Length: 362
View 1 (tube, rainbow, N blue to C red):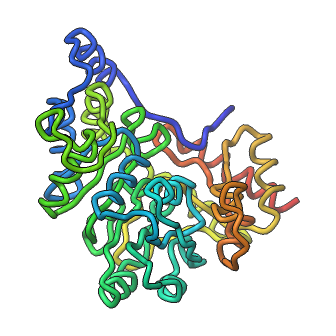
View 2 (cartoon, helix red, strand yellow):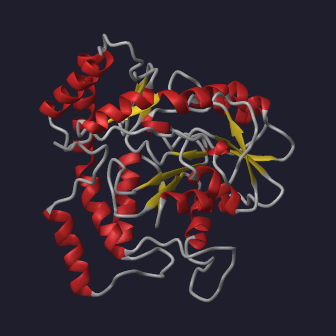
View 3 (cartoon, rainbow, N blue to C red):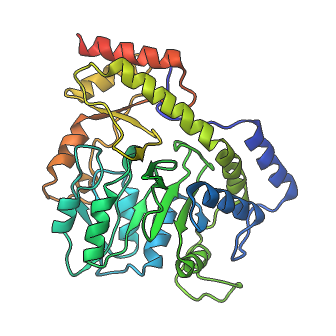
C-alpha cells in the first residue's frame, strides 16, 4: 500500500479537453485578453472566489511576481513575508530587486504573526505578503489594521488556500491582490499554472500587460512585463477542474473530520478551524515531538506523510540569515502533514490513524 501525500485527480473530461485543443492547433494566445480557454477559466474562477477580475498566469510564482510588479515593487523596497512557507514567496520578491523581510508565525495556525509584522515595518516597506499556509487563513483582521495604519498594500499568497474562507469571503480576496497556484499537488490543477484576483480595474489592466511582455496590441510594450501567459491546454484542464472543485473540497473536509476523530486523543497537536473560518484542508498538518522519527516510520509503512517545511526560507543556503524567528524554528522541527486528498479512502484514513497511534504508543 502506498498513500501519497497529494496527487492530481484528473479523468476523461480533462483528457478530452486537452485532445480537443491539440486537434484544433491553437495552443496559446498572445492576445491581451488571452485565448478562449484562458478567458473561460478566468470567468469560472472569478465566479467561484467572487472576485471582479481574475488574471490567469503560468504558475503560482508568476502570479506573485506579476502582483509585485503591478504594485511597482523594485530595488530598495522591502516586502514583509513569512519564512515558514515555500521559497517561492521570498523568491518572487528577490526577482523584482526588492528585499524580503522575514516575519515569524503564530503557533495557532502557522501563519504570519501580526505583532512581529508590525515590529518589522520600516520606511522601506512597500508591501505585506501574508501566506494562507496549508489552507489556514492568516489573521487578516489584525493584518488589515496594521496595513491601514501604515498605508501599505497587501498581496495574499493564497497558493495553498483555494476554497478556504473567513467570514464568508474567500482567502485571497480580502485585500488588493490575491495569488493562487494550480501546481499538480494543489486542491485543483492545470498541470502548471496560477492566477491573480483583484477588484481594481487599473490593477487588472496592468496585470494583463505584465503577463504579456507589457503589451496591449502587440509590439507596443507599455510597462515592464514577461511571458507569464497560461497556455490554452492548461486553461482547459483548469476549467474542467474548477467544475469539480467543490466536490474535491467536500471530500477533503470529510477525510479531515474522520482523521481528527480518530487521532484527537493522541499526544499531538491536530489542526482546527478558527471561528468563522472554513479551511480547504490542502494539508492536514499535525505537530509532534520526535517528528522525524514518526515521519520515517509512517513512510516505511507506505504512508506518504511529509514535512512542510523542515528548513525555513531564512535558513536555506541562498538566504542564510541569522535572525530570531522562534515559532518558525519550532514549527520546522515539529510539523508533519498527513494525506487526506480525494483519492484517500476511509480505509486509508483508518490505516493512517492506527499506524500513527501504534508509533506513538511504542
